[in-house]
Length: 346
Image (cartoon, rainbow, N blue to C red; front, side, top):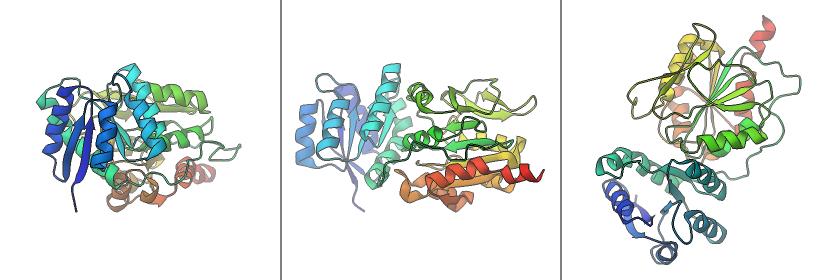
């Protein structure tokens, strides 16, 4: 298989050099050139015809967002946006995804070789997924509800797990959850620069209340909790009700917060009351614990890989986590209805 050909676009020569360094070390990727402005990028896209472009969100003159909009309107191609973790960057990240960017990758806070080498493997995986990805073939539904108006929520907790390409899927599902949804936890990987902006946006359209997860928060019906702290792991403690706990710890298998740790805690404390859905994403975080959750009587489902921008996570959830493959609407209904029959029987 030929290497993925990448064009790096960033107005900072330091950033261009650091990103090129880590991508040059990545097997299966070739950096064909780099550009310091939108004008240079236009010329190099035409001459080099790269498979993927990494594009800085904030550039002087024509910004990365403006160039993204231009490319998507004229000749769409896989683009991975590189963004800062500021509030402004958070809003720009969501806008970029809405415009058609494959994913947004946070720039390391420190412009050092060590920091960039730490994130290099994940960036390389996203770039390869972008080159291979098909994107969603149809616009995802965001209106209506997943269950009837007389839906009575069971005593359960829902978990949605995804990363690359999952924002659109999360938006579609959360907007169609009923106002009395069982408590729903959103684990969207460790690249959480857009979390605050996503909470704000979802709260304007969802029936349920969407909030950032914090330590000591009680899980209650009618609420959706977005994990946003990349410096803490998240578990659920049932010693005094179902409570979110943020805990210290090193990354597990490269992930913090770890979806595996979250699902392990839920399998131990709530077992068959938990329903987990795997969305678009790369990697396998959460998959090992998914098998344990299913063995404890929980529901484990995944979106069909062909519907996902990045198919690695849902595919792995099926093969290693025994997840049932469903389309996105079926997945949402399966999560909401898990435990309903048990509740009626009781």
